[in-house]
Image 1 (cartoon, rainbow, N blue to C red):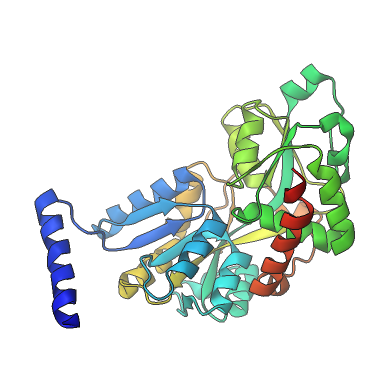
Image 2: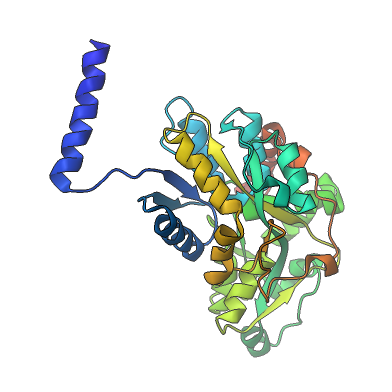
Length: 340
């Protein structure tokens, strides 16, 4: 009976595809970077391989939740982009498939370290520093002081004028939370977040949304990765980008194959492309400014110089732990989100 049911399901799928004239995608990818880069990567990969693939953009936390929910019957082959600590969490839950990519030896040291830390389940594809940016025209109009440090953002002058991501869905915002804990210590970080919360206009589902809102003048300050702010500034928006004076954290964006992927060989081929200079070049071609992980890739001209920014020694092992992520999110929800 099970065999008949399975055959019927396959037949129904074939008939549906035949009747609509739509071929089933040869690969399903969840994308955690900007929509324009997701689209550029899809176009480049299809042009190179002649295959049709499905690429869907989601926030990093939402991707992790989907992969968790589908662990017994995955519908996704590859998770491409999004903060690496979230990929590490998925790997530690046995949700990802180990794979030795073709270009692993060409990776920069920070990417090689990340690959080793993941147990060969995730490969770093880019890096970017966390920060914030403000709309210079709006700041001038409101006659407000220019912030230069994390603690400046708690000034009453910015009441209701800051946006940040929600760390439950946004990998960027979880990196912010983890960065503040590492900078100030956990209890002091949560006291800071409580003070900052009084100035937060909105917690957005996406980590890039705050900087886009600041660019358009819909809010004064957006907390985000600095490369996302550079992209908006290049588009002509009046943003001033700030590397906070106390120091800041950073992300390693990653690519991973989902355990139980239906198209495993094509998934490996996609990972190899994502780590190649050609694949990584789709970022700069679509206006993105992350630092690529392949030493042979071309650095985008406007990419922030990470070596010139005061950085914390970001603890990916700790903050890539599912237990630590869950604990910090519960505390954030109880002490910060619940007060809104």
